[in-house]
Length: 331
Image 1 (tube, helix red, strand yellow):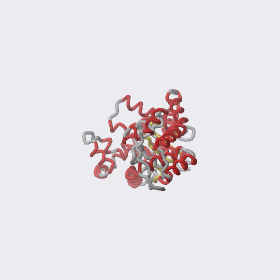
Image 2: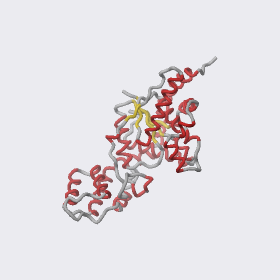
Image 3: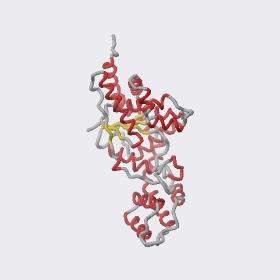
C-alpha cells in the first residue's frame, strides 16, 4: 500500500466539476492507499484572507469533502496549520532552495502578473511549502493536475537535493498519482469551457445549492435556436447540456432527448427542466449531509483533532530524522 498525500485548497464551495474531478478520485484512493488529505490553510494566507473568511472557508471545504465521501476512518484528514512540523521542514528546505529556480516557477510568474501589488515571500516559496507538506510523510505519490506538474517537479528536486547534500535516502522521490484518464470533465452552464467558480456563480452547480437555485441556474443555461437538419452536430452549449445529462440522468432519459435532438424535435425548455430535476436528485444526499455536518461541531473537531494527531505522529518522526541528519543534536 503506497503513501499518498494531497492538499485541499480552502477556496469556497465545491461544485459538480470538483466532485466528478478530484473529489470522486480521492474517495476511491482512500480505499487503496495510505492517504493523508490536508486542508492547505497556510497556503491560503498568500491572498491575505480575513480571519473570518479563513475559518469559514476551511470549515466549508472540510464539511463538503466529508459529505462527498472522504472517510476519517479510511484516511488521515487534518488541517495544515495543526502540524507545526511542516513549517520547520519548510524552513529547512528553504535553506537549499534558490531564488532563480523559485522565480522561474510558472505559477509564481502568473501570480506576479495577476496580483502585482501582492508579491509576497509566501508566493515565492509556495513550492517549498508544498514539498514539505508531502515529503514529511515520505509520500511515494501525489495527485496533481496539469497546473501543478511543475510544482511536483520542484518537489522532486528538493527531495533529491536533500538526499544528495546529506548523503541519505531519507526522502522517497514522489511520483504523480495521475488519474487524468479517470476524470470526468464537467462543462459549465455558460455555453463554453469547464464548470468553475471563477467563471461566475451561474456557471456552476454547487454541492450546497438548494433545489430552487439549481432549477434557476439550469433554466438560464445557454442554448441555441435548435437543430435545422437531422443528426446535426451539436454546438458547444448544447453538447455541454448533454454531457451533464449523461452524468446525472438515466440512460433512457439521455437517449430520449438525444433522439429528439437528432430528429429536430428537441424542446430545450423540457430538456432543461428534466436536467435540473436529475441534478437535484443526484445532489440531494450530498446536500443533506452538508447541512447535517455543518451543525455538528463536535464531529468536525473530532475529525481534525484525531487527524492532526495521526499526521503529527508521522511528521515528528520524519523531522527528527531530518534534524539529526543535518546535524542538530542535543549536547
